[in-house]
Image (tube, rainbow, N blue to C red; front, top):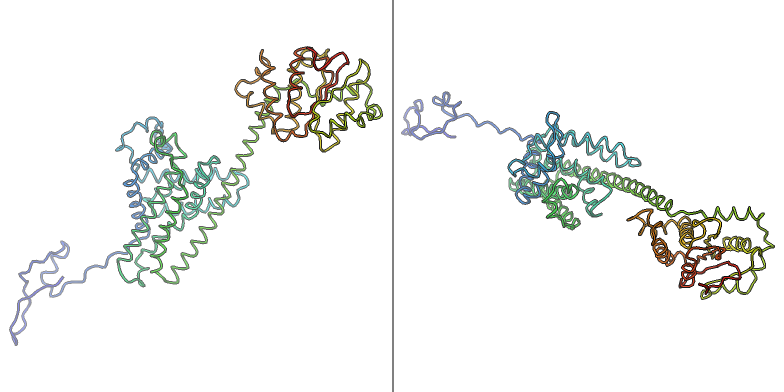
Length: 525
């Protein structure tokens, strides 16, 4: 401001300057002192902008920009915040009440966001400590937590970024992911949290000594704000997708988004724009700072990746245990008898097995043909009662088990054992049980029909047809290419024997050995 006095002629004595007729706008505090002053005081120097204020401003602008670009998405995010917030004094509103709230009521205040972030920090610390085998990941989470702790203290109004970080970590820990690319993106964004948070320090006045224009600073600020918008929207999309039930109608309507890689590439492209602007601030100190932040970000990304890997492994183990439980339940209901135990009982009852009593059949031309030729599918062995057919069969089974090219599965029919040992359904159930116990992957064929109905599958009037269908599908499995199914004393199968005979003769590729009395033929009805 300049004070103007009246003109004086050359040589005229100087007199005290009178106030000019030019109107001068005075600040109230200056009004009493400037009337008699010949020169005005210098205007006060502007206070330097604090880093925390600048961070709050940029993140707030980024959040407002996100709301402007994607109002429904941000609305869904705020519903999640409201439904997950835990107020000490008031109870949380149920999700269905939040769903019915008007948009005007949904604006989450910065204090609510901050409180949510603080609670999220504590919750994440506790949960991360419970995860086994994620030491590197736990360190990474703790590093992010430390950044959040510091940032919330110095810049509480920027809590929105930390709310998304808390929920982002929750998404990362979820073993059921929408897409691998989404998990990679979350790891990338969370790993660079400190990098993003410290970008604004480049806009402070002390970093402008080596810059040329104010326009440069304004451009950098705009690009950083644009980058933060993209970061927020990426994380909010991931969070809303993870919390479908919380985001309710909006999420059901919108989330067919799967271009996570494209969104992440967009973030990286915007980062490059910011980095290009940073090159104008080419001081050694700033370049060192950026390099250190990049190194930290890389370490955090690796650590956060280990969290997902470890939790995924735990989830797979839990899923395996769950499947094991369901498989075991299915096997229990399929069970009639463990044929391997039954074989030991039969051998003990007969006084033990002598190789000399059965080795002759191993050299028999029909046995060799059956064993070596794929088209020779069925070996019928017949004999009168008391001729040692069962012990002969036990010897054949032992020899086949010693041969790595064959896998025998067997059942001993016994007329004195009731339906459990003398029906066609029981024979197939016994063989299926033996097959599934020795080859756990085959249980899927049983469970395909078992899971919807349970144990009644094997006990209703259509049980033979159900079991026959399961066996037909299971025997097509490529892993059973070398399987040989053995049935002893077929003549003692007194219930639905013909069904069993038909199944044996109609099985197109499976090899069978059947022992029976001479009076029974494969064509008898």
